Image (cartoon, rainbow, N blue to C red; front, side, top):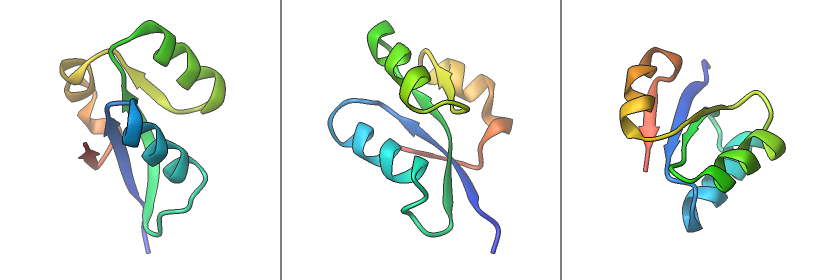
Length: 74
């Protein structure tokens, strides 16, 4: 089965939990491709803790790169 490349919209609260689960491969059939995070400290944390994951500064930025993922998750 092919993996659905997922972009998570938001990195607070539940978003950070989704990111970690997807990054670790704990969600069958899905993989983490990117995360939309509006604040700089969150963006820096994403780059540090989840290397290889695209970081988008806002939803418009994520949608401008929508070819990099198959489905957004909020």
